[in-house]
Structures are given as structure tokens and as C-alpha cells.
Image (cartoon, rainbow, N blue to C red; front, side, top):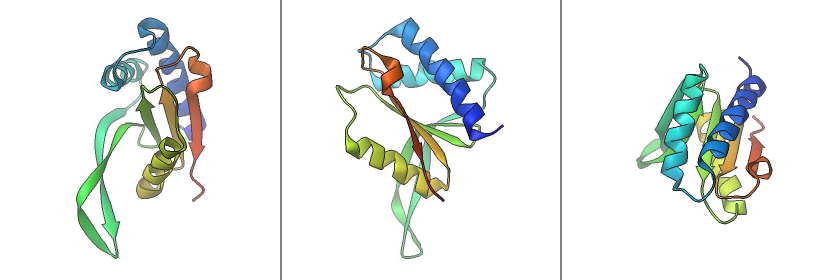
Length: 125
């Protein structure tokens, strides 16, 4: 399955979760609900994945943690904040770079219009 096909299915799952739960909950609630919905929809999902950080050809003693990765291809970074900031896009771009993935979705569930709060981020490889 290609990234665009995966992201289409992910968007559908995001709408289901948002329409059921609404805004104003903690990020962890949306993460669990979305993970459940994606699996219910037949997608392979992993959550809270540690990403090692390398510098100067050594592995540092820390990791970053991805919210969700779907079909080992699309990273989903979830937020429940008043507004998405430029740093959130940079964070997802860094995750894409570190994992050598092409597509990520940045989603803010704390909003009145979920359609305007799903952002595609493409890493040029």
C-alpha cells in the first residue's frame, strides 16, 4: 500500500475519532482511540515508538518517541493544543528524517474543525 492510500484511510479514522469524541481531551486519549480505530480498519499500527538519535556516527543515550506509525510508512504526530505552531512541523520533519520516512500527518484534535487541523508533511528524501 502506498503512502497516499494509507493517509486516506488514516484521515477517515481521524474523522471517526473526532466525530465520536469531540475536542478538548488529552492527546493520550486520542492516541489510544485512533490506534484502536486504525487497527479496526485493518491497518498495522505501532504506538509510542522510540527512535534512536545518532550524532557523529555514535548513538546518543536518548531517543525521540513517535506517537503512531502506520504500515511502517506514515508517521502520525498527535496534538491537543490551542494552536499548531511552526515547531510542531519541525518536530515531525525531524522524525521523518531520522526514520527515513516520506510522509507524516500532524493532527490537532483540540479544534472546532478537524479538516483544517490535519496537515501533511512530506520529507524530501
